[in-house]
Amino acid sequence: MVPVFLAPPSIPWRPTHTPEDAGDLMPATDPRSDHPGSSGQTDLDLQLLEALRAGRGGDPADLARADSSWFARARVLRDEFGRLQMYYGFGIEEVSTKIRILRQEFEQVYDYTPIEHVRTRLKSPESLLAKALRQGTELTVPAIRAEIRDIAGIRVTCSFVSDVYWIAEMLSAQPDLTVLTTKDYIAHPKPNGYRSLHLIVQVPVFLSRHTEHIPVELQIRTIAMDFWASMEHKLRYKYRADMPDDLRAELDDAAAVAAQLDARMGRLRDEVRPAPGA
Image (cartoon, rainbow, N blue to C red):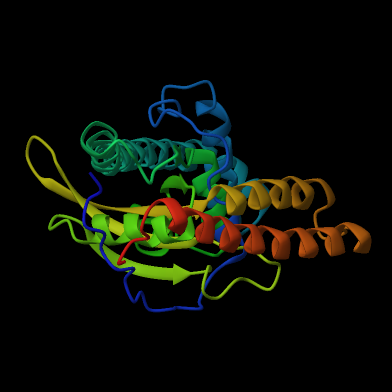
């Protein structure tokens, strides 16, 4: 038995983005793997200290004499980063549970699931600090929470384009999830050929004494889109801004082929199973 499909939503296009929108969810990690008790703790202390020094400026001798107080402040920031990371890890768990429930329901009730793979990513304190410094964000937790929206991320991979919008529709309809922003790079691909549907959703995390409302970035894409994005990321990482023209041309062509493959597979799928909204 096939469930009644929801029509793909009319999700508004918001063209604002940063170069990291596609970079994004790299290795899948356990949200707890970057706990502040990890071996990177000392490195983060030093990074924070250097950031505080750079922000203050002044004579190097004066800075040297003030190291102890600045180092203490860096440790306070590190502890706050650790707590922030814990909250965002909980946010990933909340949204991941929703996705897992949908997947299991489809597998057990309908013998079909639009969800192929799910990966998660939680920015490490070091990565979070680097991004804050890169974009000029004030080194305070309120400023970081307000200006950096991809601390927690989940990538959902589907077989068909219609399933991408279907999953977004089902998650958006849940009453405790609030969609904050949407970027539809499927309808409006990036100039480099990147295609995916990005949502920032906010989920409540109920703690012992208060509730945290945590934004989580959702990237929903097809297998073909994911394959292309993974290769593009590897090449961009290798060549930085100096990717050879022939490789760039190959990537452009591969992006077009991936889009054609998605369209062809969608037509074949319609022969055996009605598309969402049909």
